[in-house]
Length: 154
Image (cartoon, rainbow, N blue to C red; front, side, top):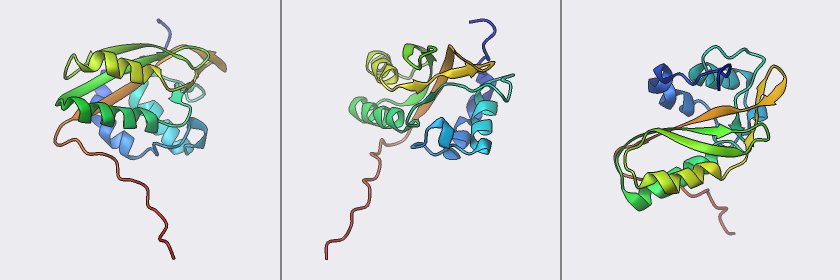
């Protein structure tokens, strides 16, 4: 994979700050230019402004929801850092776990990370193969996301 922008592990501590500033339900083309730049700058060293990283087609909400479900089911603690290799067509083809808090996560989380379709990366104006980073902290009590508000009945 030489020639591809490298995901820099030196940026890992900033992930929580970055993810708090990005809407999880928006695709890449609906992120503000400043949000796209923040994501690119935080994860991809030396990526030209004209290039784009891979990104989940519908935003990372599906990935986050799967991580929450898996965490609740397995009750693990620790840090997760994985990368998803996304091909030129936007298909996730491989997951590499760089840090995994429990080996039981490997198979079930690997499948969950291969499931969503991605917007392929763009290198020099063309679709290219690149990794998408996934981080999660399995600390404290696992909580389910809040249900959406419902309309009150008259």
